[in-house]
Amino acid sequence: MIAWDETDVKLSALGYSETGESEHDSIELGGGISHWDSGGFKQSSLEVLLGVSEFYEVDAIELSGGGRFYFGQNEIVRPYGAMHGVLTMLDDDLGSQLGIRAGVGSELAVGSSVFLDMNLNYLLPVIPAEDDVTGLLESEIDGMSLRVGVGIDF
Image (tube, helix red, strand yellow):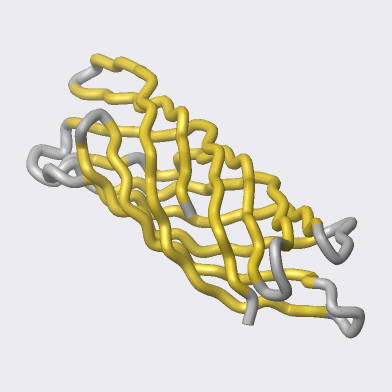
């Protein structure tokens, strides 16, 4: 999965706060299991994703887990709603953030088991990152992401 994100990063320290936009790209690799009905349609999926990204020139590793719920599908298009818990671990001793990513998307069949996955998500911070050294700097990352990837059902 490759994601193009438009994120807001809020930094707070000693009563001072600043919010700025940060565009970044990320790459994710994931796996999961799906439930199919007797007609051959996907009903739900549970998945785990691991990715790398960069915010304001700070490297990050993201680990997420959650699910997809499919609706109104046919043999070619499988639209879905999704929700994931996301742990973003920032480099440079800036701590880790816990958030929720929710969105909608669609899987487009390009073969018998290969599909193109496109989705639009919003990341909402739940627990902001706090620096590991002083505990005085707090970071919150939120915003929209457009994600495109290739998946394989087997």
